[in-house]
Length: 186
Length: 116
Image (cartoon, rainbow over all chains, first blue to last red):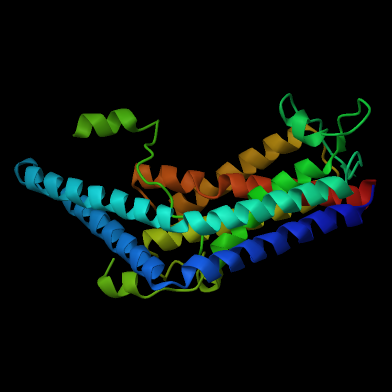
């Protein structure tokens, strides 16, 4: 157990993210088709935002026409998103395979090894990650898997954010606290 | 939001440097970016702090969640004065899990550096 193990895992995680983004760039991001569909999505999103903004200012009578327009725009946005995802398939496959390979490599290095001590005791299902392949009942012992999962949650998405390759977010999640209010105002 | 604003893209670093500058108008997308990065920074700082103290157990999770939620909602409602409830909710969720993961990583790392 040493700090160098944690740092090693963190570095591996950063490295693998950069590598997988590199592969994705080679296979997808630099292609004209991807750029075009991304632009298309942004345009549609802006259009929808604009219609929604106008809608809040217009009277109820004028709303019907606007609603149709909005529906159509949302429909084409959905299609555009689907196109983008199918275009990404190929590289996602390549990346997934290399990630599995990397993970099994890490597993073989850190097999049964306590990487670090946790400052807390994980609850229930998390123990499956944090105490994976470890002997003993001290649940503050932490295995590589847990750190690796945390890294891929935190570092990976931040790097994607910096590189500007984060997957587009799915809109339309409603605020549960204000859902009622929305329904009433319509 | 004028059309020139939405076409011109400003870098994340620029946005972050001016996050507390009230003279600059942000688009919704830029506000999201700012909230995301401020949250990550807060997560890492809290992680380092808690790891050095060391704060252990679920009290530090609690403190992190409260600090994170308070800071973010203070930022967008008092400093940026966002009013739309839907957008507020979106901002409230933005980057939450990532910042939590960053917090855990730095907390565990610094706890191990100083106390193990």
